[in-house]
Length: 146
Image (cartoon, rainbow, N blue to C red):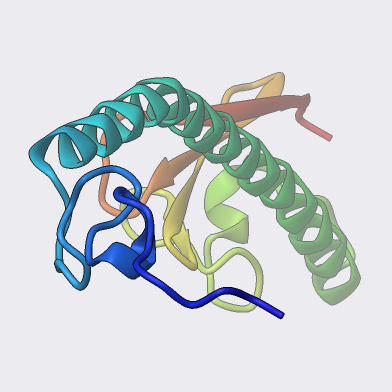
């Protein structure tokens, strides 16, 4: 059996908690709030740069994939033109119509949130990927003109 009697000072039964705060007090002390804010600031200082690096690498990877897709689109358009006309396209403008690459007046086509720009020379084709309506390419791929 337990003895009943007055509780020892500093225990929960005496009306105060073990750390000297009132029983039933709501909220946090200023020191507790400051400690939590400091811990969150340290975590943010470590996590945010890594997150930004991750986003940058993901953007580069997507841009390179879009440029590779542009090369594949060109190869498919080239093959379709060859099947339709029985001859090789002599310039990029032969592949500009909607049946092939669907290029606008600037030699670009929109693919989702990206633009593909095709630039041809006498010996090579360069496909560059841009974010939609941007002027600086994110990635490019070059192949010999077939």
